[in-house]
Length: 323
Image 1 (cartoon, rainbow, N blue to C red):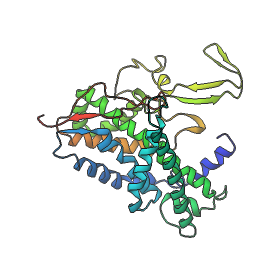
Image 2 (cartoon, rainbow, N blue to C red; image 1 turned 135 degrees about the vertical axis):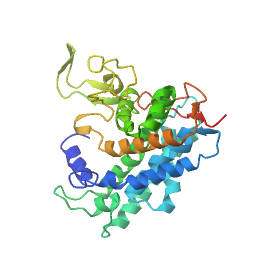
Image 3 (cartoon, rainbow, N blue to C red; image 1 turned 30 degrees about the vertical axis):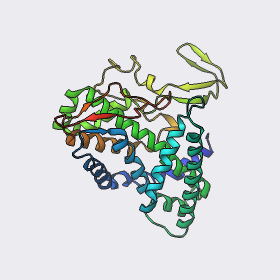
Image 4 (cartoon, rainbow, N blue to C red; image 1 turned 120 degrees about the horizontal axis):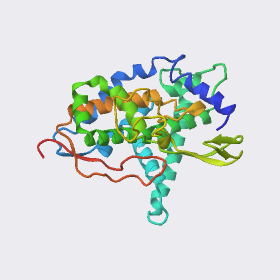
């Protein structure tokens, strides 16, 4: 979506997601995030082999976003299934995959949209602290969002905010296991997690490419003119490894200074879920490093999703304990 409609809807959503109108949203989730992460890790106790994706990274963001939106606890299992079916259908290949994979994704999208619509309708006239209630009852300077826009915004949180966090956590654990010295250091220096996650967003970002943008005017980049109207692909991962901007860009360095990566995009479309994604990854990776017992990779490299846009392993098998 482009300005001015994009700007209006973004302002309306941001009023309830962060400063200056809702400054304590992410910090207010701290206890819930920590409890959710540790509850998932508790479920790994006694297992010699775990899948960091299926057992941990995949359920984490759905649980967090459902809590943020105000989805009833009894609905959460359905939301987990819907998001799972939607994400599986993203990689649908008509030459190799059964059509049922695509059909399940379509049904999940329709079921998710219908249930979110019901929840938004129930919130009218019943203000509460959850995001759906705030959006459904807010008459701010830009007016009130339509129910359809609230549902679309909630779907963005659930789907776009899910796969990215899954990949960030999985890529992060994989990178730590490939750099055991950093993993050991993180256990001894828990504050390292903040710059470490920033370096992960630069070094192994969940979103590699933003496709299908159009040039609004002629643009000159590195002595090359991109004509107005040209379709462009923004190579975020490449930009974050630009040797003219980052020293030794192919090295993972959690002590890197002035780390202005493109992990959350840039400009007016900068990901406004970034603060929440950062904190989820910080708590998740910090607790995994602290609590897993001598973790080690089973397969390296692990299998990846066949996507040029989103980068992350489908599975990340890890052994722990004496093995």
